[in-house]
Length: 357
Image (tube, rainbow, N blue to C red; front, top):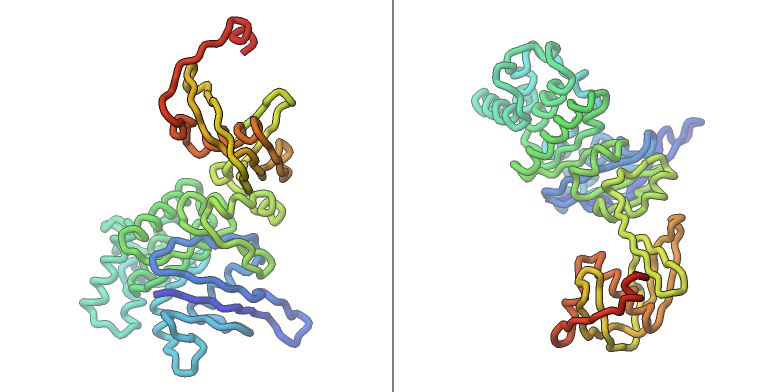
């Protein structure tokens, strides 16, 4: 199962004074078993986008393929799609209506035409997956806490046995504990069942520690699409659109190099280019009193951020090139001893050097 979204656009109220383009040529691929976070500020196009995925809204232009089939083909079974792509709307507790929880969860599979035994079996399984205590199954949904109501609503969709579960702002209005409980529950059921989950939120904190991939919507455009590490590397751009990246998501690797010409501060350094070769003695404070012969590039070009978080590029030859390679190796978890040719040997420094050091 996969969903391929190919350059879909959508415009509300076409031909009226209220015409507004909500999506602008959005393309992506959603693979089976992924846990995706879809984030963006209010009005960015998140909710409009997910309603396209199960056919509730038809794109103004573009195409969507579910498991290789064009969902806009006249012979496509849209009802089947909606049973396979389950959507839990924001504040789903407002959609609970039966006299008890169990009947509410049975509603979906019952309307699929399943017999009573299969319907009730699915309801029990779905309620178990969301971690709701059995003592609550025959209580009114209106006697539950906000978090418990969300679990019931999610169970109602799970009972349909969807291949994709879309949750639109599932933690909205919940206290911190309720929010964590719901997200932990979703992560657990995703791991247990292998279901594809798309978690929609305006809160970066909600998705940062749970998802495998993040899609960022802004003004109807898919702005970023990648792993949390890749997306949060653009934290300055995210802040500009009202999405402050969590500190745990910002990769900050810092080195300070000084070969006698003043300190060079490198944040998140990356080697862009190397050339030539030099072989010489190399030591490290990690292994005091030891040295070894190491071959390094004679020329190195490095891109990084400075202390003002501005992008800078440095070029170094000889000792500076060696220092760049040595320190960036440290950031990647490697010591110079891994590159030593032959054996390490002991070195001694005179007293004057020791005092200055």
